[in-house]
Image 1 (cartoon, rainbow, N blue to C red):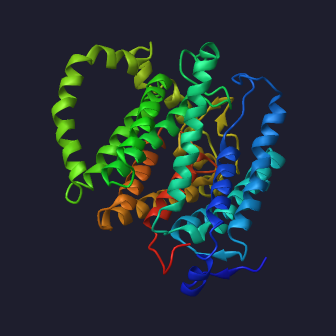
Image 2 (image 1 turned 45 degrees about the horizontal axis):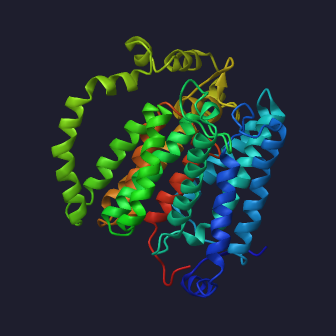
Image 3 (image 1 turned 180 degrees about the horizontal axis):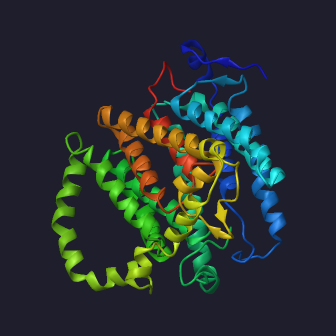
Length: 402
């Protein structure tokens, strides 16, 4: 494969192939499948965990193939997202062979490298005026949420078997992940409707699907994070979009009434049967974080990490991006991720009001909020795909669209 840097002339020539969108969508769908973990305990049609994991892991080579078909000349368009995460990936490849579990850690790092290679090959699609990556992202999210809804209708007992919280069973997806996808799809759809990119007849079915799914997952992080991100992102549209102003006006009028009438129900939903102390301790997460941070480590591991792991400590999930990154990739990894989020957010705030910057603000703010209680930036995950879409929405168009 010949790799060259993408210039203006190359961009115009690459635009001439009408079939590229199809391969782009397939590559993006394969990346989504690759980051979706499999658990036979939730599956509607049970088959071995090994087979499910092979399907998930095998989607990465497929994504690479589709990316090469979408970008047959191997054109690259560097941007801050792929560059910083390439540095993070390089760090993972350097330190993972020194992990206690060398083989599994090195495999995770190699998978991370393959994931980033696919994103590099898709980098020419950053900055398209029609927001091609965003359209692919929305399509994939809609299919996933639709499958969750169908699973709940076909087998409600199994779909709600996870402590009464909605999970995916057509392809097994844990409630927190379902909530992530639902919240992101809901927020993006509302913003695009405010910008008149998506008509009401298309936005309404999506919202009618995502809102009940999000509520049924009983995931506080996704609900609150999505709401905060949507408020801040829509605020960037107030001066330029009449729909945003009208939506804010109705929100200011309706929200206090809803909160006053349904206070007890909302409190019950947020507590999920827990005591206030348990909720304040984030369902035991804080004790795990304290244990990880208080563990004595050599200086080299504090700075560079101990290699990619399954993000658990003594068998308990870490459930914090920053603590997990510190464990795996050290303070350097934490700094790289923080710099990336700051750059994306500042860039979005400085851009003229529009659908691209608004979507980017939503995705970055949501990521910042969810990173407190969920992992996702130190390896291939749906969060990395969210940030790729945010970066693509902020990239300036060069010449003709790809």
